[in-house]
Length: 233
Image 1 (tube, one colour):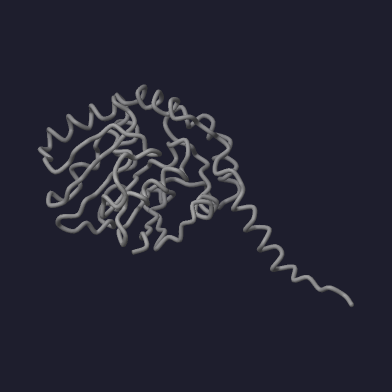
Image 2: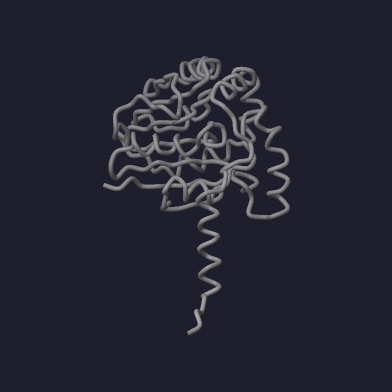
């Protein structure tokens, strides 16, 4: 009696196993390192990352479909660039690890008279809010910054109400083999200016147990992904 093996099925199983266990990034960073980096670049953050990433911010805020009265949490509020983009009839809480970034955000919010936005210093991997506190949890350009993206997104899901949405906008490792090699090569350098260039999206989704409602490319060039998930009711 001979045993026949389905080669295609075996290959799929091996690929799935690899995705479930492979490192999300070849560039591990610690939380205190991240805080130090952002304290160092806070004064020039808007110049470096302001206009260059703003198209993605505009597209993403529109996709959030915020309704009057919604409670929104922005994870990684930075210098508060998004603050003026939110509707005035929702309630926004912005958190960030870095005090220097929050100081700039406070000044921006005061300048725009955004009374519906409050700021708190907090670690994205250890949110202090009760379960189900927000209707929408949004992390723009944040997951490639934190030391443990899986832990951060689990916290996002935890504080999102049942039936609510948690959304992240981020750069992920390219599916193009040549480009991905470059991204892996430069990632040990890019962490010193605030982000990992090689965060692996398929591995991240599998390891975080996420089944997104949608994944769409935003920004110019369209190398950033807006990933929308719904928390089970």
